[in-house]
Image 1 (cartoon, rainbow, N blue to C red):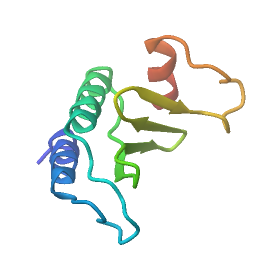
Image 2: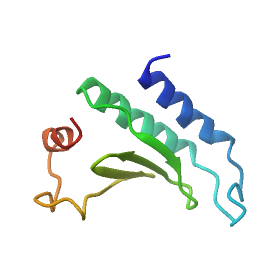
Image 3: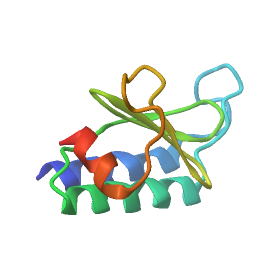
Image 4: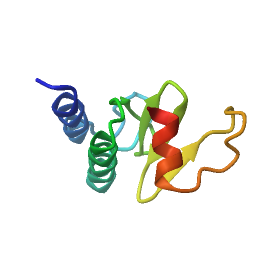
Length: 101
């Protein structure tokens, strides 16, 4: 199985997480969040970006992690780049892809 298919399979598996999946009252992962994450990684794959690590977050969102960027997926996308010098704001698809390639 290629990396993209493996990552999508891992994202789809998040649908099985029920309320309290972490024993600390974690929320289930919303289907919309899963679809948003799949959409993002497919677009990034088309740009030559390697696949992220996929992690569920107790608030029902999804964390996609690369070596130098964390992306939280919910009904919107939140880029966490506070620790990257020179990247105070990510503006534009090309800049995001350049960070990840």
